[in-house]
Length: 201
Image (tube, rainbow, N blue to C red; front, side, top):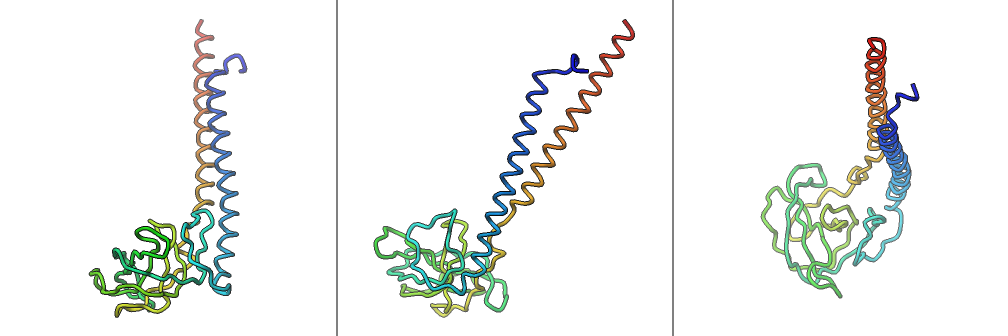
């Protein structure tokens, strides 16, 4: 059996399996880290307000913390699908604000919600709110009180923070198991073929 073992292919497969298992373990560690973050986020509403980060850290963003932004000027708008505070589907209007010490957009502020995508009329001002995830800019501030005649947007929820590490870990472990099974089946078939050839000779 050992003499018939393809050494190079075996090393290659075992290395690949070990890599996939390692990635699965890493994802489990990430899941534990993310669960700790989610616990921190869950307690954030009871914490004091913080200054809005000028340069947010994507790995340790202060989601769900209370904060405020002094929007010196609105330099642009974007409308994304969103819900009102009472659950109606529509548009969340995000103002790209210039802030002190920043060139161009310094903060993203969800000014409020409406059932139409058209940009509202608002020149800026001080906005209090809650820091939420933003797919483009890491964070944004969801206004506690809407401006520009808009309705209140749905506040951020823990479900907004992706936490897929456990499922990724399961996938890597499955890939490793499947790769190992396929290799063993192929090896078994190869050895049977070699054995039959030997018997014929």
